[in-house]
Image 1 (tube, rainbow, N blue to C red):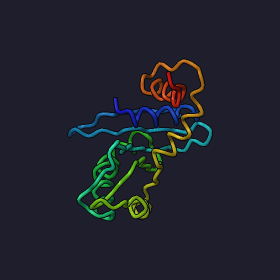
Image 2: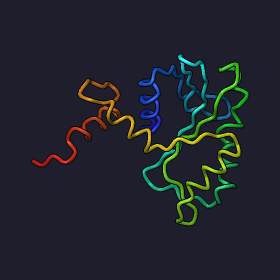
Image 3: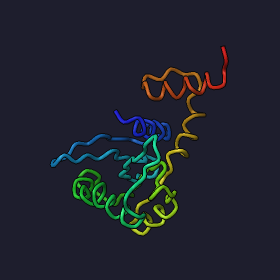
Length: 157
């Protein structure tokens, strides 16, 4: 269970999307999330790449984007097309990205757009999820942990 993926799934489900996640494919490949917006019938292939550490890559933004797109999207395109059966949007959810200890997120986003990859920043999703939690019971332990942190943040005993 990938915590970042669980948070993204919760966010999408709260918006009414239908999801299929953690789809195992041959050759040890996996699709993180396929989603359909029932209001518009728009379809999405979503990959989540988030770490608590700032990811410090050994490639520049252009090289990293091409390699990531090939590995996470292009290599599974045939499977995604079979499942979704029509045009879909490719979305990458990312945290922080650096190259030689320099933040390259903006360059990375620019390169992703050249390859028809939409970018969603994980912190934006997290900021949208927090107000949705309220005090209702959540069975997902990751969502429950965020809810508890929100409720008890800043309280001293």
